[in-house]
Length: 172
Image 1 (cartoon, helix red, strand yellow):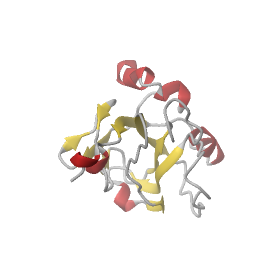
Image 2: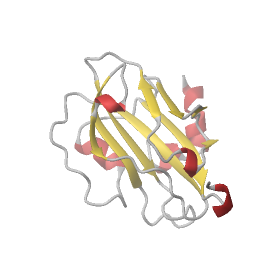
Image 3: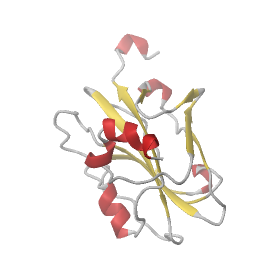
Image 4: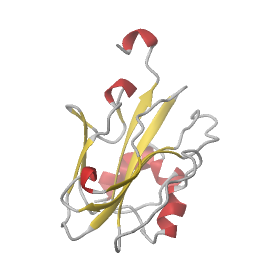
C-alpha cells in the first residue's frame, strides 16, 4: 500500500501540505479524456471546468473534497500557500462531487509563473458538516488546520497534477 503514496512524497505533497496517510478510497479524476495521475501535466486550458471525479465507498459515508495550489503565486516564493481552488462537502461515497455541497466554486489552474502543483485531497467525514462558511479569501488556506477544525483526520485519497502557464499563442 505504501507504494501508492510514493509519488506524493516525491512531489513533496506529503510533508509540505499533508501528513503521511494510507489511501483507503479510490478517487478517479478526469479532465476531458485525460486521466489524472500523480505528477502528470495538465494544461490550464484543459482544466477550465471542474474535472469528472468518481469515488468508491458506500453512499452512507460522506466525504470532503478540497483542491489547493501550494505554490501560489510562485513555487520559489509561495507566499499565498495554500491557494484554495475548490471545496465540496457532504459527498456521498460511491458518487461524485456534484452530489455534495459546494462551499467554494471551482477555479481552474492559473499559474502566473513556474510549475505549480494542484492537489485534490479527499477526507472522510464522521458526520454531515452542516453549515460551513466559505473561506474569506482563497489565499493562505491551510488544509491541515481545516481538517483538524472539522475533525476530519488524515486524508483517505489524494491526487495531484502539475500545471504551468501556457504560451499565449497556444491557448486557442
